Amino acid sequence: MILNVVWIGFILVGFAVALAKLALGDLTVFARVMTGIFDTARTGFDISLGLVGVMSLWLGIMKIGEQAGVIGLFARAVAPFFRRLFPDIPAGHPAGGSIVMNFSANMLGLDNAATPLGLKAMRELQEINPDKTTASNPMIMFLVLNTAGITLIPSSVIAIRQSIAVEQGLVGFNAADIFLPTLIGTFISFAAGLLAVAAYQRINLLSAPVLLFFGGFIAAMAGLYGALHSYPPDQMAQITGLLGSGVIFSVIVLFVAVGALRRINVYEAFVEGAKDGFGVAIQIVPYLIAILVAISVFRSTGCMDYVVGAIGAAVGAVGLDTDFVPALPVGLMKTLSGSGARGLMIDVMKTYGVDSFEGKLAAIIQGSTETTFYVLAVYFGSVNIRRTRYALTCGLIADAVGVVGAIWVGYLFYR
Image (tube, rainbow, N blue to C red; front, side):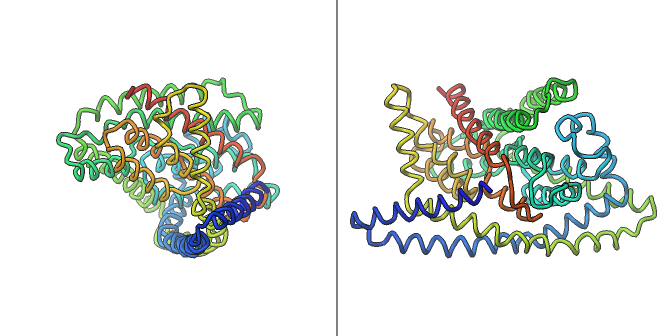
């Protein structure tokens, strides 16, 4: 299992670097490492525990939708597109509807809804998995597309930029000016992940449903930008918040209303589904703590700083512009830790200025990439998958292309 190799590598490399720092006189290095380990172990448990309520809510709602037949309708509506990407999912299987809803929540930036919906989809995909300990083709496709998922509106990044702009005394600052570049960056990452998995699974993407999806999405991006780009940041945040919340609540109402019309005991269906929430959330605890601890060791020993420094030196040696290097740690950290990447993004904005090239690029990278190791640990751990096959490879390809694409877009828009 590739995660086993990565986990061992993070621990051993971190230990070797810590020993080197100790030899150079850094007497606090092991104290920092142990503090980070204990803090991330507690964080992993807190995250899992926090999922209990949300998981129970969404598994209950999804059970209503499943018994009402709405999930099946979702699956049939997107069947032409998903048949190309997920040929091993039987026609009309509820996993198709769960995948659609997970992607929709991700696109709207609704993490609290996206994670339980994604875990629900993984459980349904596990039902049709012939080898319960090995990731199936549909699982890998779903996971990679999830880690490289398209985010229509990076609401949290916009809010952070606006807050820092106020601290820095900027007047008339448009925190949403990274909206279109970020959207393009996420699209590049999504396309890279899709192409990588399609190459492994030998899926032909040159079909009408797939081309129609990409064409429709590009048209939707243009339309959304045209409709929102003229609003000030606070109004844009309000509109996008209304859009996301309205869509999700409308889905809940739809499930309940259809269930009532079909004379289903909606309350009992909700309770039946919600009972699984606690078990799913608790099951991911050891997987999540394991990956977070390894990441903490790699980060707290300074290994991440060495990687960034080496990349910057290599780029400078061939005569290329190195202005992007201060923002690069955000992309590298995002693969490992979402909160860590957010902290690095804020640090770049405060150091170089929220309206600087480096500050804008850090925001674009933060909004264009995903926490691949976290997603793999949580999603595969929720269904006890031990052999992940090429999932991590494709996820990292999407991440790498996403970071490079975000940097290219940043130069395209701001240089």
